[in-house]
Amino acid sequence: MTNENNYSKTKRNSAEAAAYSAHGNFTPKLKTGAKLYKDNGEETGDVFDFGMGQPYVGIATLNGEDYFKLPNNLMVKKSDVSTFGKMASVDINFRTGDTPVQLYDIAGMPNGKTIPPHTRKHLTYTSTINDEQFYNYTDDDLVKAADGVIDPIGTVAPPTPYIAEAEIHYVPSYTVQIWTQEHEPVKNENGTPKKLRHGVRVKIYAKAKINGELYYSIGEDQWIDSAYIQILNK
Image 1 (cartoon, rainbow, N blue to C red):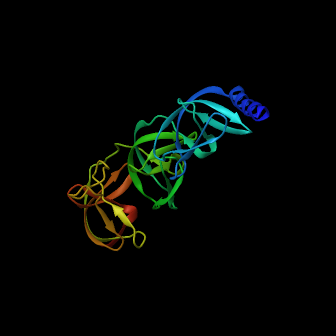
Image 2 (cartoon, one colour):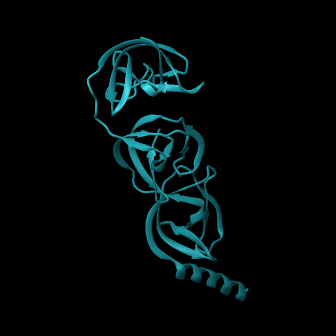
Image 3 (tube, rainbow, N blue to C red):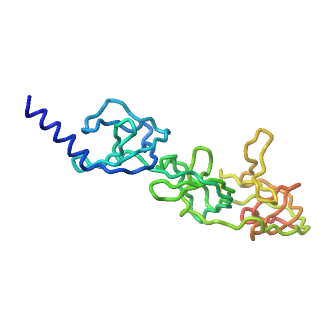
């Protein structure tokens, strides 16, 4: 009994000796949450729920494994969680390249969703997860800053009259966003993004450069990127 007590005490002391003060925030990587541990490395039987943000106040090393120490003296394994920085406001137009781009959950883990190639979207928030910059693509989805480029904002030229018949030309089953001339997404009456599917016929009324790219007008303050338009006749 004495030997067991001494062994437990040694484990506690070694964890405490290896601990140092540090501050930040984390969230579990997995939907099942992150296991909680006592300061001697024993499991508590409880988990910290996914989607919850939690500050940590220190880092401890126990048996070669790093743990984040919580204010209540419990711990989580560093390998089970993602760290994140404070969200900040941005005002950018984000554009993907020639291939689909992976989306991520709030823990910075791939969530199985992708953004189609050559997609542009106005984004307003950024954060850092595990020292990597992300943008909030939707309320639930993040995109890595490194997976796209930023287009300039506010370079809108006067439209030029241009009458033609055209067709949306993209990827079968994909849709194309309709934009205002200020490059804000046009929405339906129910608040959902207004888009057109590949193959839909449209009439062109004007053309203009928006953020340096050529757009065609298909109605009052409704613009489609020329990259997704195939002119049929004019």
